[in-house]
Image (cartoon, rainbow, N blue to C red; front, side, top):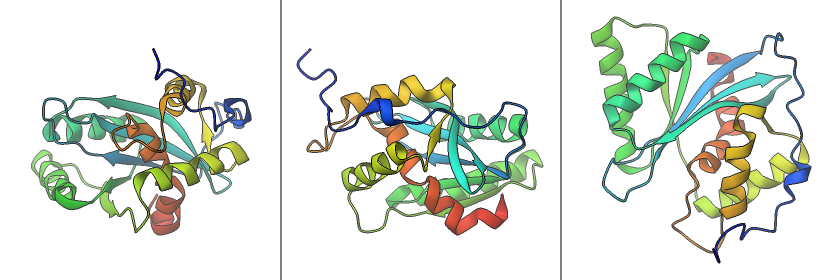
Length: 189
């Protein structure tokens, strides 16, 4: 495979181990969603559960697969209820903003309250530029990966090509929002 492990710009050995004990309570938790259209050949939906310790985010759990918008909401709600998460942050570029409406509508229909679904925007930087910046944060020890997600993230990093636009990088995109989510919505966790 000529594409396997193409990214040698990132030293995966510099990614720090999860520094917190399993019985330690985080300061906060949130979920980031990168919705997808569910079209054949389209991107997978990525859902990431983050925990915050000492103001630093860590990716604890991740789902990345083909999901309809309704199933994305169901899977997210199950994570929220199972892990007591009150904040869901959704990438809201273009049509993705409508996801907030449907998330809130389904919560209302199911009688679920206390979960805030909020938007987050990409800003002016391209996705690849955001991912490049995030990788520096990850290897500097300001962003952490739990052992349950480390291999899947490392796989995406190893196969991510910063000059291509069609990378399989949904989880990497989730990670780009972790610090911004704390900055914007840390008081809602």
